[in-house]
Image (cartoon, rainbow, N blue to C red; front, side, top):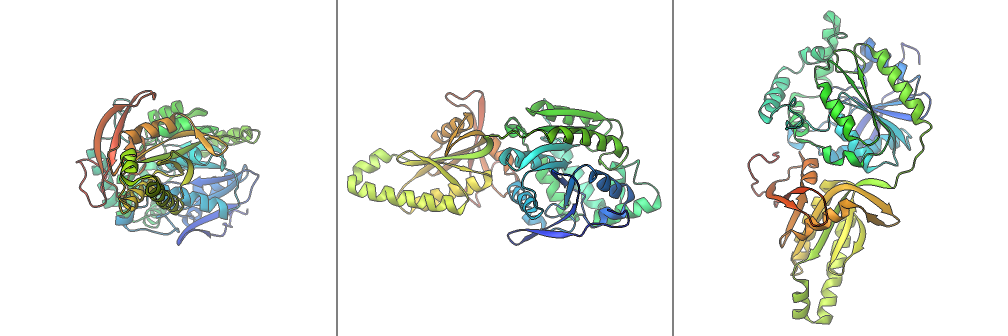
Length: 460
């Protein structure tokens, strides 16, 4: 592509939501570049270093550049309607389909890192490899991550970024070696203003500050390159090291420099590392039967007593109505029936929010039949064996369900951490040992819509 020419902006659709993307033709496989919180596919070409980086990357691989929902030229949202990660996964699939990418490399920077990890673990058949740049599995401070921010620090930082968005300093501080002079600052001001709005940067910051995908990293088996600059001003390099250590097939490469964006600073070192990794990926054609899934178990409370009260004929009729109700709701929420247990179901979902909403709908719908349902959900790695699922995650889901009360939806900590920003409220049910499942498990009851949650739970 000539230096004076830029690719045409196209749109993929996820329902009524439009998603802007561009394609730079190059060698296969396709690579989807997810830029993170600053992104505008049109303005990318007005900054020489960024434009050069994209053109040089297209010498190595076919590049698809997309603005995430809420950013740049893609559909915007209001601060009160910040989309959950689950919707963003569907957006990624829509862009890949529109760009003709059956199986591609995901190149994710900053806050797109957790999104890419979830997509690769959930849809390994769509992802050939993963490149994670300047990102982390979590932004929550803990004993293991003392370098990260406290909730109060996250709040202060989100407000500060919101209040100064559009003055260019945010971008210049993260690309100090590249965004220089009056022209660079002028571009940075426009790039910030046309990437996202002050309200969305605040609420997305809040959402990602609460997101934690640590629990699903062991389920990610695609080849992964974790790249991080030693002096990254946005994300400490310790986060990159820890992320790589938790991924089964990751290679960690630390680069010199003090810029957060891959196109800033010494971009040739970045491109060289990418080219070396992608050359190895082209020969890796492993097919995986292990995927990330949300498993849902349901069963009827006191079914034996209920059957005795009704008698065989009426119980069989009621059970048939129960089964039809559950199957209808599974279809509505894109769940897949895996097995039945006489008075209950095992189902799987490709997103935890759909699983929770389906479980809530099952509880409500079967109540009108005079039945009380308990439901439990866990998100983890499962092994596909034909139409059946195997693995620790399945056993964990069953144990979680066994601890649920009547008309209750109980979820694991992992599920709770993956639905931040979805408007759900939870009640802490303590830490438990699940029979036959290693470790201690934090469990949470999903509160009905409109019910007040415990202090400190996700809010929207």
